[in-house]
Image 1: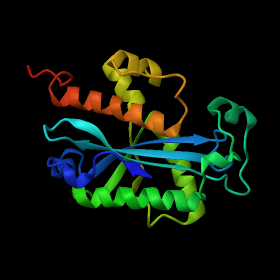
Image 2: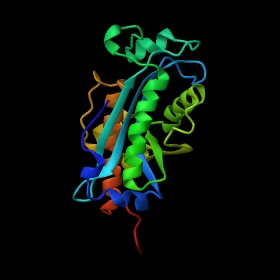
Image 3: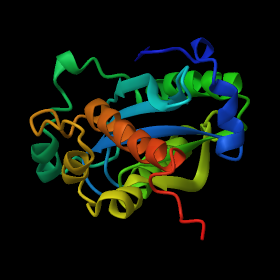
Image 4: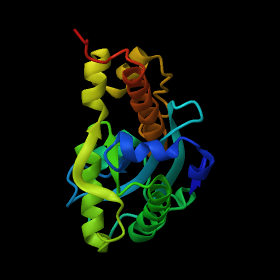
Length: 218
C-alpha cells in the first residue's frame, strides 16, 4: 500500500543521486515479536521515501506499508507484543505473508529508485541497524536478495543525527526538540514511527543544507 506524492511529480528528483552518492534515502520502521531477527517474527514494515520538493527542500514522500503474518517457526515474545500492542491473529490486521509484503514494498521502492537515477536505496532508521537486521533476515528467509533495493549494511541513523543536532537520542524527545508533534498513543505503529522519523531526518537534512548546521569556514 502506498500514498503521498509520486516520484515523477517532483522536479528536483534528479538531485538525489548526486546528493547521496547514488543512494535513495528510505526511512524504515519495523514492528517485531522480539529483539532477535533470526528468532522472532517480523510483524509490520513501513517505508517512507525522502524526496526533494519543488523548492529543493527534503520532504517525506511516497509511503509503503504492510502487516505481516508471523513466519512459521519464528517465536512471538509476549512481552514484545504487549509493548507494541499487536495481536498477530487479529483479522482486521489484513496481514499478508512476509514474502508478499516485502515484494510489494521492494517493487515500489525500486520504481522510485529507478525514477531518481539511483543505484540503490539506503535505509534510514532510528536505531537503523535493528530495522535493517530484521529486513535482512526476512530477505534471507524469502530468498529476496535480488529483489531488495537496500544496501546490505550501510545506513543513515537518526539516533546519531538527532544526538548531534538536538542533544536527544530518544525518538519522542528528539521530535519534541525539533518541533515535530509526537503522539505517544500512535507510537509503536510502524507507519507512524517511520513517518515521524522521516520528518526528523528531513528537519536535520534541511537545516544542514541551509547552513544552520554546517561546519564553520574560518
